[in-house]
Image (cartoon, rainbow, N blue to C red; front, top):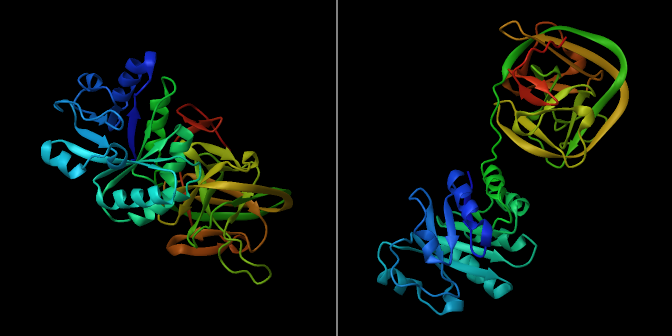
Length: 368
C-alpha cells in the first residue's frame, strides 16, 4: 500500500471535516504549518509540521516530523537534528530546473524522508529521481494536485513514489485517495478443468482484445460464457507460421463472453473500449491490470468448448474456430483450440458470486 499524506494548510471551513476523514481512513500523516493543529491529532497518525517559509516553532512536543527546505530557509538539517533529539526531519525540494532536480536526487539518495514538489506537469523528472534513488532506503513523498495525479505518481517507472501529499479540495477526496493508494489486484485461484466436448457452432462475432501492454508467454485473460466459470485464453506471444506475433493481443472469445476487470467486476467483451481495464492472469494466478487499446470485433466461425471442474461445475467458452486461437493448460502448456478434445486439461477460474451489471452480488442467478 502506498503512503498518503494529507495537507491541511489553508483548507478553511472544511479543515475539521477533512481531519476527521483522514483519521478515519487511517492515512499515514497529516501536514500543517500551524502547530495548534497537531495537538488535536491522535497518535495513530504522524504529525508533520511543514516549516518552509514559517521557521521552526519553540517546542516540538506535538511534532513527529518536521519538513524543512535547507536552500530556501538557509537551515542545516544536521544542526536541527542535533538540537531536537527525538524529532524526525525531512527535506522539501521544489523541482523547477536541472539544478533543483539534482538537489532532489541527492535528497532522495541521502535523506530519510524527501518531500518533492514538481512544478512542471511532465513525470520525467520524477522518473529520474526514482532511478537515482533506487535501493537507497529513504522515503519519497511526491506532491499531487488531485487523486488522478496521485494514481499516475503511484505507477511511475512501475514502482512509483513511496507516497503522495495531497491537499483535498472537498470532503471525500481523502477516501478516494486512500482507495487509490490501496488499489491492488488480488491474485486468483486457478483450477484444472477437463474438456468434455468441443463442437462447431457456426458463425458469430468474436473479440480480439488488443492492450497497451506486452503479455508474458504464460499470460492471458480469463474468458467464459458464464460469470462462474472462465478459461485462461493465452495472448498471441507464441510464434505462428503465417503472421508475426502480437504479444499485446488476446483472441479472447465470442462477444457475449465475460472477462474480469477492476474490483472483481466482470465486463462483456463487447463492451470493452479503448482506455478500459482488463485483468491479465498468468498460469500461477498472478494478476495485473492492463489497459485496452482497442477491441476488434469480426465475424468468424466459432467453437464451443465445454469443460468440467473437479467439483462438477460446468464451464463453457465460445471462441474462434481456428488453430492459432489458443488456451493455457497446466505446466504453461499452450493448446490450440481446434485440437482440444475430451480429456484434455486447461486452466480456469471459478468465481463464486453471481453478477448484476458486472458487480459481484449474492443472489439467485441461473446461467445456462
